Length: 545
Image (cartoon, rainbow, N blue to C red):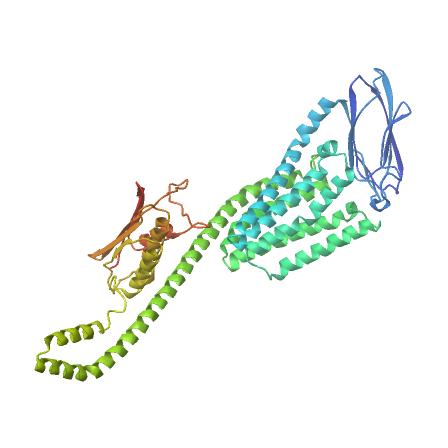
């Protein structure tokens, strides 16, 4: 029941005749109104009287209380004396409940238990998402979006918890609950806007930045007015109701625009959750002002949050999949750049050695006529021993092949030589690599073959570091346009994941085997990896033509 158009601190008195039994309790709720309750003229409860709260609060925060009635066993005259709020012209009188404490709590839990439970779940979910974001940001900066999503859930949780009547029975601090309810409600739009901004990659969008700035100014102004004793948070609430509705509508329009205009996949996925949440915001505000249902406040918003979380969980699943795929692709690209750098280094070294050899050959050609004169002299004089010794010295001075060759393909050859040298440095003496890879690799880019060979050898060298008798044996064969690559290497420990795939022992994990499998499948091929008796077996095939 509401009494409207009352002057500030108008006194309203309600009386009733009650028959009380031993163990009976009285449950009341007073909304921003001081109250005194008398039983047969004796004061049994009071709240919000002048001097009991700081003046800048203007009106006492909402209070719920459960206290015992006099156990007279007879009829009791109950008097409830209210004073109307000074910040509102309406005095809201909630029904009282009388009975045993257990019966009253059972009734309250049946009406508001979901709100209490849901608020606690949201607060816990918010903290979990914030922790998850700190883990994700180590691998991907966009993981910070989960922090803002978690903060949004946390704000909604403390808003619902602060205004739930049951909470007031367990937390006897009305001021704290008052602040929880209004802080949560006033700022809940901000983390949601930041979440949308990050997911849609709109750091400089004027609409979102404008809404965030407006909300910041309004929140600061509302709390300044409360602390100055000019206007309470309950009075500025109506401004935030309109602002929250406007923000949600604008955000929906922005997401829709991004989905249609830019054909943004993330926007398309977010559109349904945002439309659901906005619809229930409209229903919540309509019920608040029009009083269609006599239900716990924020019930419609809670229903909208449940549907929002369910639909957004699906979106986050896709979002995480995209992040992991992007991370894998970035790692693969980084590895390809690394291989290209190694190839360039190997080519530079080969060019240097070839240049040195060429210089030596020119010098030897220049000196050839002198050598021929010496040889002719030794032959004419019959000094065969000196001639033999001279020829041996001359032969040893001829330049050798600058670098060994493992296969005809220069790019793959450079990568294989690099890891062969790395294996020898790691103490792998038994390292044999024989590759039949032609210069012309058909439809398969040389870089993809370098990734396969490089990843296999890198994994092999890593696995051999802790093995008792390390060895690496790699072979390949090209026939009828199909290239087959096999490698066996020693391994000390093999770890498998839940999906039975082999897990990397590298810090932060690795992508070698998954990258090899992906490349092979792209060229009508496949791969297989097995481990048995301390040996890791790898086989890859793909079609070159």
